[in-house]
Image (cartoon, rainbow, N blue to C red; front, side):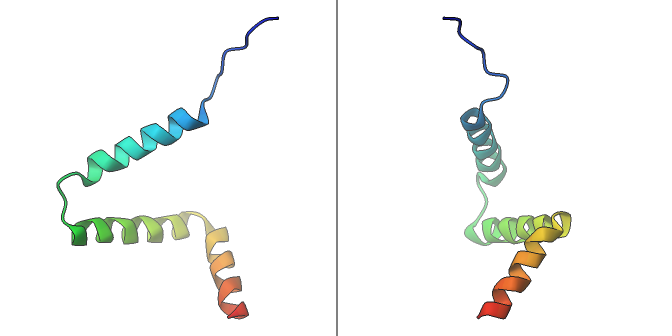
Length: 62
């Protein structure tokens, strides 16, 4: 049986992303962290229009 090497490791990618965010937020106040996440949320909604569609659909069902 031959072993296959991975070209992509999802867990490794998640750990790298978490570490990058941790480093970016290190030393910031709670308010600065909240502002960071609000901006990232707004940017994601601008870059990914489907998020807006899902949000709008959720508002209709409430």
